[in-house]
Amino acid sequence: MITDSFDDRSEAKINPHLKSNASAVDACIVTFSYVIEKYVADNYYLKQIGQSIAVTGNLPIYQLSHNGKKFAFLKTYAGAPACVATIEDTLSEIKTDKYIVFGGSGCLNKEISHGKIMIPTEAYRDEGTSYHYAPASNYIKIKNSEIVAHFMEKNRIPFVKGRTWSTDAFYRETINNFAKRKADGCISVEMECSAIQAVCDFRNLNLYMFLTCGDLLDAPKHLYRYGDSQYKGTQHDVSHFDIALSLADYVTRQ
Image 1 (cartoon, rainbow, N blue to C red):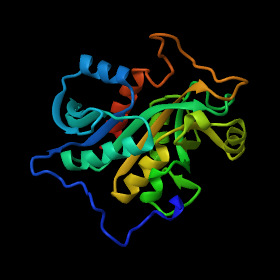
Image 2: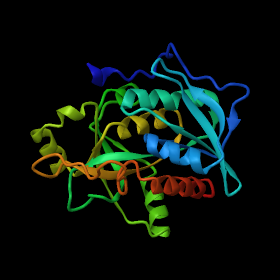
Image 3: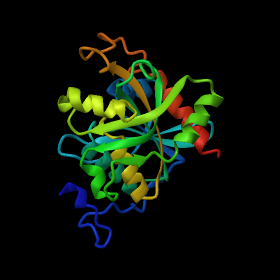
Image 4: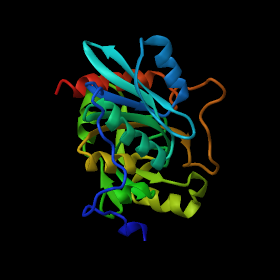
């Protein structure tokens, strides 16, 4: 069974190995959005310092400078297996223990989280990847959520904290499962959070994560919040990169 998959008694067949020429950076910023990737490329000087190699296409890892610090930046794939593999790849390409990850999520409670920055405190493990990095449990604690919340408070950025539901199958977010997760206190649903925290725990990395509660599931029908090129308050909102960059600067000064 998948819940028996965690093995910390034998070595993995494949492991990341830090390259001798790996670049040291203060933190790594990870997005899922091609719109945000283009915004960063258009507005910052980027230098490629590595890549994640995949049959679907290589993902470049860039470096940018901000307030005297060096930050890595990359766009990853959606979904727990691909996203975690990308993070594992960075462990060969760059030197850092701080990862700022931000992306979109579906809103499970419109009264609490619709259209707001959401800071996950725990993630329901409805995906398979995390069970290879951590012993089985229903939820995994998002360890640095209070640090992220303090940053938001300090910078007067509206936010809400709560549980999130990480699923492998967004086409199988059934009415019954939605009701169970909402009753359990989940206010958002996405595909990666629990797995990212699990790999960060396993590799002794610090994860700082926030989400955008964009499309609405807490309605009679699933609703998207945007049309073509209308990205404010969604996973493609470029202002969220500015938040992520400021958060990266904040956590490296603690």
